[in-house]
Amino acid sequence: MSPAPVRPWRPFAVGVGANLGDRRGQIDRARELVGETSGVREVRMGPVIRSAPVLPDGVHSSHPDYLNTVFAGETTRTPRELLSRLLAIEAGFGRRRGSGCEPRTLDLDLLLVGDLEVREPGLELPHPRMWSRAFVVEPLLEVMPELRGAISSNAESSISGSEP
Image 1 (tube, one colour):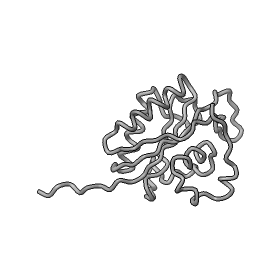
Image 2 (cartoon, rainbow, N blue to C red; image 1 turned 45 degrees about the vertical axis):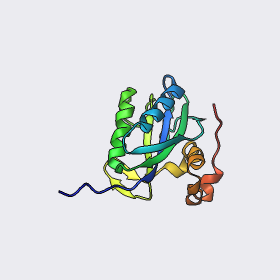
Image 3 (cartoon, rainbow, N blue to C red; image 1 turned 120 degrees about the vertical axis):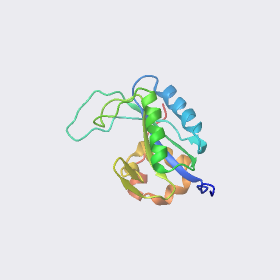
Image 4 (tube, rainbow, N blue to C red; image 1 turned 30 degrees about the horizontal axis):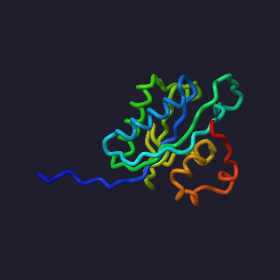
């Protein structure tokens, strides 16, 4: 029997947000949990920025503001394996995925895994909306500056935010 093939280490990025509870504490603990995951190494965190909830057109809410950042590191896990781990971490913080615009204790969105392109139910890489959201782009470029050339000048010029 031959040994299992060795998977290459690939860079990955995760968009992170929280707008309920101890937002910063939840983000810090999530970083620890991602970093403790087998097949994951060198997890670093971008700057934390405050943002208003992104709601569908015509929807108004008094949802609390989010704290957002990006985790980046390297992984040998497949995108589906990494996503499953992120969803398990969210669930551990009481997250129940619903309509998408509900307040949440923790939101972990897989943004990219290397240069892989994936279009599967429940998993699209690179994340289809990441470049249009300043609260993702700013921390992403801090932890993965090599991506600067991947964004359009429109996305980069719209970056704004302040650290809490």
